Length: 356
Image (cartoon, rainbow, N blue to C red; front, side, top):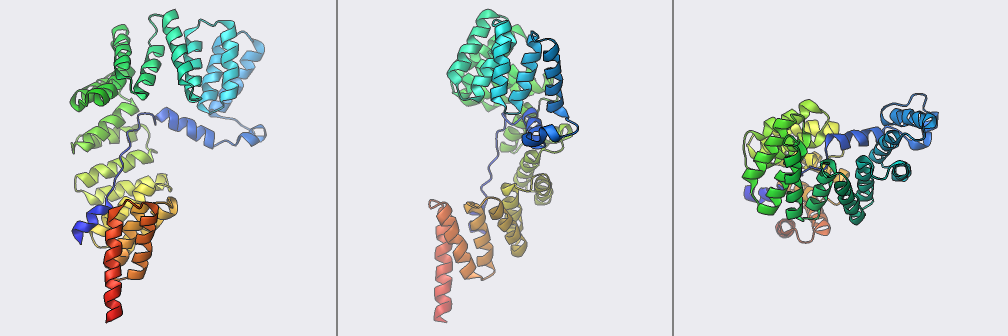
């Protein structure tokens, strides 16, 4: 039975190069403010206060391109793409050759999933400003997303030749060599180089932690812990730290990390599931069942959690309940074979009970 339990553990470790601390901060700023009640808010803080301030600047100086671009950038962070587009248009009317205007216009197109237009803007930016690194980096990032790795690598090498201390270029070069050449050792060197150049580079720290954790390298935890020093509210990092501790066979520390993750994010279904898995391993079936239930409540179509809860019912001899959950697991994912095996076991047990 213990071997069957291993089927429970399906841990997804996210490579969150795109989920950087800036993105998280933007989401927090946005979620804390209801746009419909902004006018009734007595004191506006953060991005909203800056947007208001830039509005006053533009009222006094309507030809201030820098103010238009700064406000457009803030609006894009908040997902207000229409207002951002208007500011970028006004900035381009003042000087269409400005590198920052081309950069932001390309970013706006990227957010709107108009990548062909993004590519055109960034290529034009590079043409107008041959020594510009930011447009090259954005274009390299685009090429990386669409897996045109050779084009991305060429641009990144150009950035490094222009600025040998550009941490972002080394970070993306690490991604390219990892994905294009499957050279994880070289990729780790580039990620570490990015961190050496910018010690609070969260994306690079995250990538190092994830990749080292996958290699069962004990250095992984130090990268995750460094991120938590920078931002102690990263529930996803506590989850990844929990995965690391499970790989290192340190279940108590893993449970501490998962508990912290769900304190920060009560909707973290994966942390609930992994807590249930750990408790199942030590045959604490009732406690495990509570966590599997929370995982299901958080993410209804959660075949892993239905399987885990079914297993705890089965181990407690509650075969009808186990059968119902195995059926739910199969309904959520018909290809998940362990649930079918579990269903066969409990059906057999029920048949034997019926004969006795």
